[in-house]
Image (cartoon, rainbow, N blue to C red; front, side, top):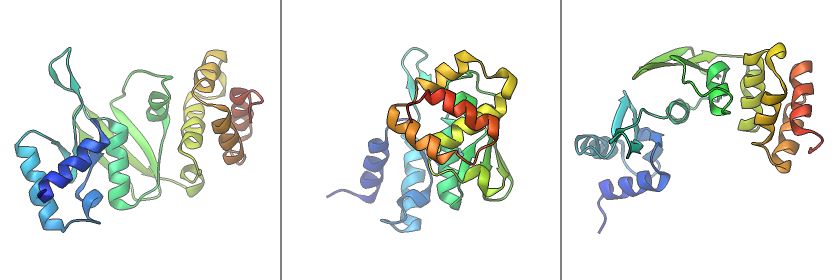
Length: 202
């Protein structure tokens, strides 16, 4: 018979390396004290890693470097969002990074949130949640908000054909249709750029 620890481990393995989570991700099935006990045993055995208070991850491992990689900042942000029941949206450099427009991970990663202003130091970077108007975090689809925030971070004058092509190749026809419908309330030039990115595929 599987122990609770075994059941929690199998949920974690099922999500794959890089997944970040908190005790709340298991609370529908198990009691809080049991979850805390199991998680601290898994940290002690090196199966999972404590990223910061209340958030853990199942770290990715680099065969080349023979070491665990830094936590996935977006997974950590989503773990906080689930924990506190916030809606969040990557902004600025975080959005550019997730879309692959910028490959450098900046020292401060900002997420817009409908929760309070909070910041957490995680390894070499700071994860900051900024209380924001719901219209900035309220897009129905994640890719909509990502694209809007990335375009705003770049600014109109820095959005060139290369940027449009880089974002466009990440969207299929169905995604374009969703995004065009979802972002119709975005600032004029932003929406015009999204239309260019989708190139009539909506």
